[in-house]
Length: 137
Image (cartoon, rainbow, N blue to C red; front, top):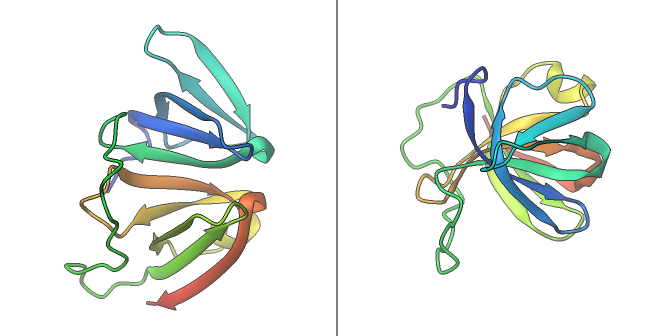
């Protein structure tokens, strides 16, 4: 599980489909996400313009990879297993913390269920969601 106070590789996806690669902390709070690119340039993105912030293992990914949509090795816990469908049709599955921040914040962290995928964690912006389903606990 990603430590929220450390920098990680991220891909910021805007609602218009653009990708921005760089580094960010997972402890961003407020209405903006700060991204630092490979040259050290900083850029802020407003949450209302984002689809999600993906914390990745590497920037290139694998276009041939086929996702696994369940937690095979995960023990039972107080987390929720959810499926998120974005406005653009992309579907992600993973777990979220079962607390009030899921309801009263502009977004939430989704720890993706597919351990073989490049995406590790995503900060999902609620305004980019078409459907949200709880699959289990």
